[in-house]
Image (tube, rainbow, N blue to C red; front, side, top):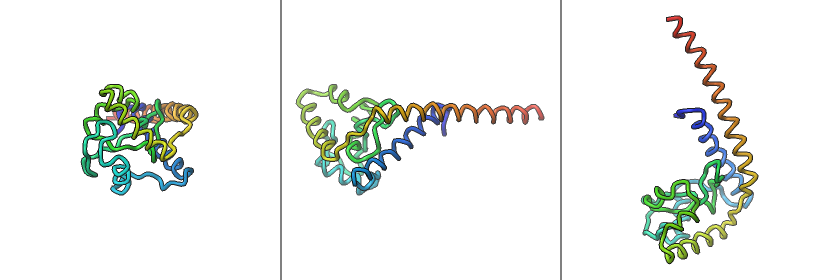
Length: 168
């Protein structure tokens, strides 16, 4: 449950970027990415069943699917093929909202190069290159709009609740 109007706006951004990701996959003539066993298996196969960052061996059940480009209003990563990669829980937790490039900078040089090579091959394979600048402007507008609407609804319900409390 949302704690504030901004939590609602952040959730709306995630839903928006998931739906845009679906449309982006369809535009590229791909079956939209779905986080089910088949999708995870296909991605794991591409990465030889290893964490795309540290190379730790993974299974379908141990793999955490991570967005290379975070799915938030700042980064505007899409929930689509080419942006969802296998990660171990430790790397996923450490990376959090960082770009994958910044996260790799925290690793030893040899590990960085190896991970970067396979990630770039993966991104290139799926031709993942959405227009983030334009999506970011739309996402920012959505964030503000949802925040305002949510704030207005909260205020209206608060006024109604105050009348109920005064009537007690």
